[in-house]
Length: 445
Image (tube, rainbow, N blue to C red; front, side, top):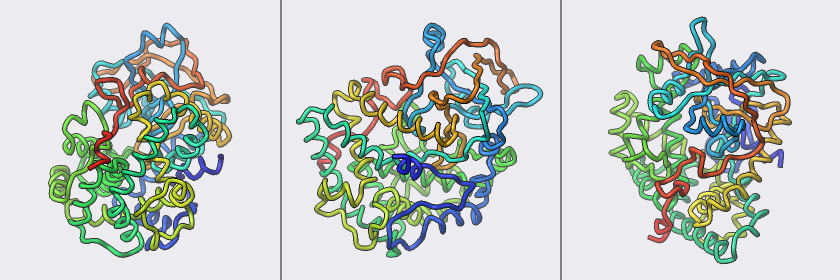
């Protein structure tokens, strides 16, 4: 179990790599070197301000926006939630300055766009320098699969049968392009425009690809952008979060209301248009980067270590066989399919609390009171509400005209090692309260 969680974390300050599939044209080490040393902003992967803050051993200052301040005051409790951090209280970093606490550009964005929320400020006093391992939600597939297999009894037989049928239907529908991804990862490239158009056409039936597509483009934009704004943020040790926010909101109508990456699927011409609107100089390289990076990343987050990507096929997929050959991808599909089961609001804690307990155990052993999104260290960080060895203080805060945060009122609250109920979290939900995600019929066309 500990090993599975360790493989789902990335330390961008280390050259250590994970076991992966065989037959790949490029290794994880090749990509780590390219991203860090051959892109304009690659140095931020290991040298960003957030990582330096964590590894310094000094107090860590974070901000969190909430619509539930009255409930927090009344209960005296703060809970974790799921999402890209798996089981943490979602925050953004703050930097102490003489005039106040300066938000990371992600925090500034949250303050600008979440006018209806109140802001909390945390000072976390770690017991030691914090390990710079960040959790990568794209690599949680094996954990999703094991949790499902362990807790299947919470599902009715019809629910379980429907879930498995839906997963296999999606795999069989998407199999031709999934095999194309593996072929590209093994060094047999598809023409760029054709690749992007096939990717876009496959996402509706196979929504997990929308998440990988978006993360690859976010990585490309943040590491390659050289306009004045990202340069200014880089001088502060920050990646520019506004780049991928603008991409997502321009690509998908309503994304600012419901951030649902299962709907992210721009085709080639639209992709070039979107990137050109952000930074014209980045259009020429985006399709090639996406084809190479996404193909490699898919193989690594889909197949079991040692599985030969060059010879593997998803055609005629069998559920039990895939638990051994492609457990990571199977787990991601199960996780996302479960979110559209009618009873998911009732099942949510049964499955997600089980993962949360494991995540907290891993972080506690590894000395991580403040886990962060290690897919790329762009500033998404959280609080491990089960960490037993750090001190903390919590205040409400106000923003001054300079954009700095100032603690106003000390709150008598306690972190609890449990997940918040789905109904009171900011997890991606639609207007009915169901978790955001793909539609069942998408797998059937």
